[in-house]
Length: 116
Image 1 (spheres, rainbow, N blue to C red):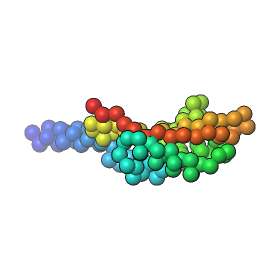
Image 2 (image 1 turned 180 degrees about the vertical axis):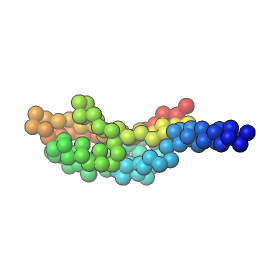
Image 3 (image 1 turned 135 degrees about the horizontal axis):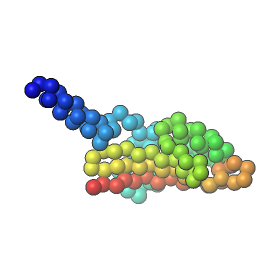
Image 4 (image 1 turned 90 degrees about the horizontal axis):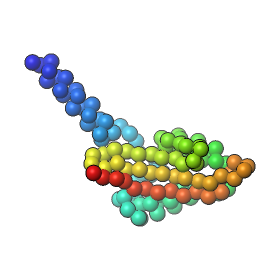
């Protein structure tokens, strides 16, 4: 009987870790934003534009954001980071345009979430 209780407790712990992602660290550039509405996106946008003055090599943007834990799509020039916290999923995204020389010529960011 104790074995079944331990198994159930372990399953519940694994589920909680999956749902709440307690060990997933929010990237420095996205930490401490004010809520999940317009002002938060504006603050993230300002931080991104300050950290990545243009023009700059797109590879530098990719390296810096990847180092902070963002998932990168160089095909679409977007970096995404998301964190689950039941009942919401919070998302930070940075996207940029690249010229033929590999220089980022525009950059922007959004912050938001989806809740059940």
